[in-house]
Image 1 (cartoon, helix red, strand yellow):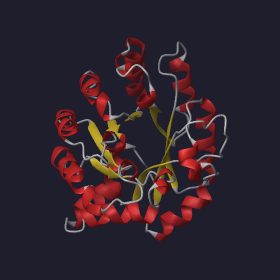
Image 2: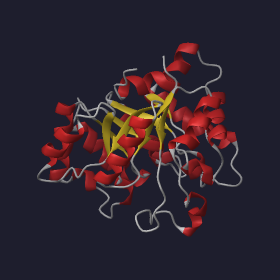
Image 3: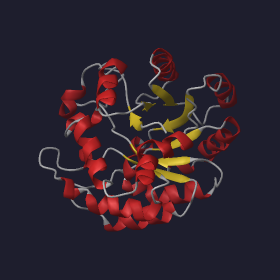
Length: 278
């Protein structure tokens, strides 16, 4: 079974397009490309990765698909399409011709309308994904979890995955409402969850492995080992640490689990979810 990093990003830094990279995120104002990550993956024993969009454009899809074509270790691309567009099916037809185009993500966390995912046109867009065998990555903050429960309930056959455990506020140890909402969503068996993006939700300079244990415990209890997948969130993880630290954090947490369970977390679930053929 392949060992897969289920969540990372590539970009050629553009200050206009990438205006989400503020001065506070100065370390990310550089190019981060496949040759940079390939070395890290290989040194940690990974066979490949899933690259996820960071810009909401079809140019982004083309850029990432080109990266995937030139680098066999990129096993899949989660891109972006305007799910409310009148010509959505035409665009789905086009991108579905690429074997490595695996799914769609919209940056819901940034939408001013917090229940944006419940817009009728957006729901229609999600409905269209199933016939193309495409997944959907849910990128949200905890305040959107209640809407997300209503959202996923409408699509029992659509594969969903929650990115970054929905970004709980680990720094402030907020957990009660997040726990309740995560447990409610996990009842839908078509919803997976990524163990990614955690260190950047903690105190960047002072986090300890034990800071994450309560959140990982809840995710494990809710989703089980067959619906969780490791993701480094490289290069964003560099804000609070490194690829190696993120990998070690999750590896240490699951160290006492069976080999089969560890294989699920570190690749098996991603292979199944994203329909990776190698």
